[in-house]
Length: 128
Image (cartoon, rainbow, N blue to C red; front, side, top):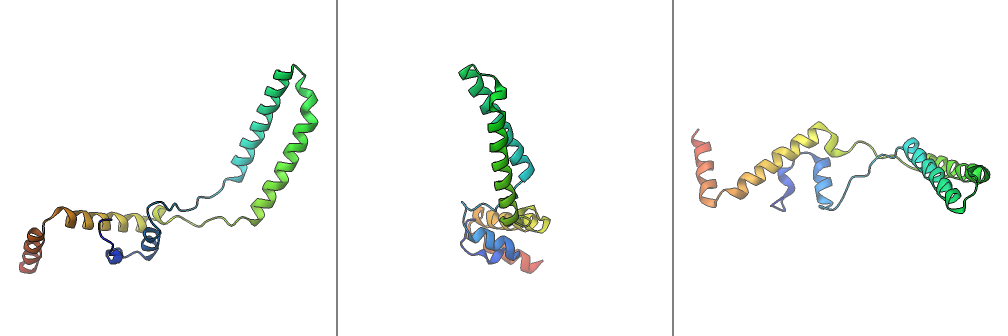
């Protein structure tokens, strides 16, 4: 935005989002199943690397892997119960996107035009 005047934005949710600044990011939903799967894959990969490095049989780590996976499962289920998933993002909403496009185009056009051109456009609009 070129201007600090956010009155050109009609959508209140979009206005609140822009007021938070350019570095603010809306929270994303957590995919617990995908995250758990990735962590379990990492535990398996680590066990394979360790067994290869130590020249031991992978089956020696099966109890350790089961224990670690059990702890991870418990912690993820606890987080899943206590974590509040964010609602829909403002920019995923069709109205929010359209309002942003209109506001950006309006401010861009005003930025590119000189003061005299803006006055001529306003006068021409009043005549038409």
